[in-house]
Amino acid sequence: PLVADLPESPYSRALVSALVDMGRELGLSIIAAGVSSADQATALEELGCQIVQGPWVSPPLEVATFLRQAPSSLIWERPRPPENESTK
Image 1 (cartoon, helix red, strand yellow):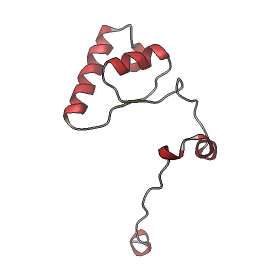
Image 2 (cartoon, helix red, strand yellow):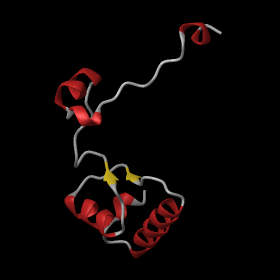
Image 3 (cartoon, one colour):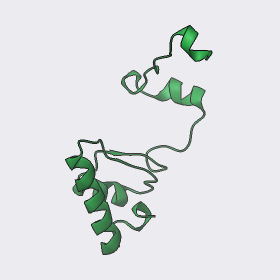
């Protein structure tokens, strides 16, 4: 895993940097998964990663717990298809 080897591995650092640059050029939001330490988060921030997730941020949560604890700005409801389209 690339993130697990940050910040120590120059190989992982180079690959993550290239992936972040490519995503940025494509206009994508960059999210690093599996971040388990402040050192990893710092390295990712230095490389231009915009969002991190993983055990350093929060342990896995049940949906109900997440909905109670997460800031409302992070929660949105996915649009549902019209009733006649969902039954096809």
